[in-house]
Image (tube, rainbow, N blue to C red; front, side, top):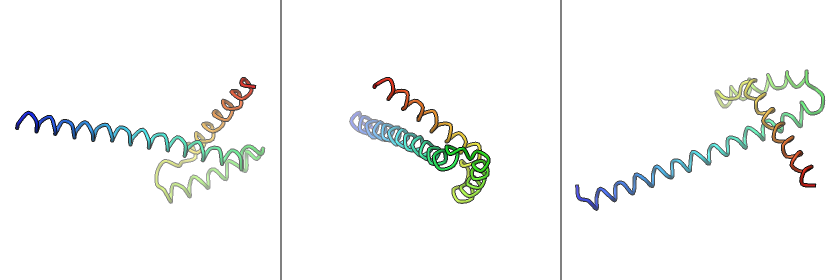
Length: 101
């Protein structure tokens, strides 16, 4: 193989690796937003309104339905983590707003 051909191949390989890395970062960012949004929705509609016992039942049913429809990754535990994630960032955002004002 000639030097220009090897350089060309290495250039294409580097391009593919860089774009795969960018794609992975974009997917990761979207998944974080999805988890936060799901947790926020659950918190606002169910848990934030002092209906904790009812909320646990709803989360259990929702986890079953999501797991049936989307496969793994939406267990009761995962949904609870989503809620915690949303709560932490809600508190963080409120704290930042208080400091800014």
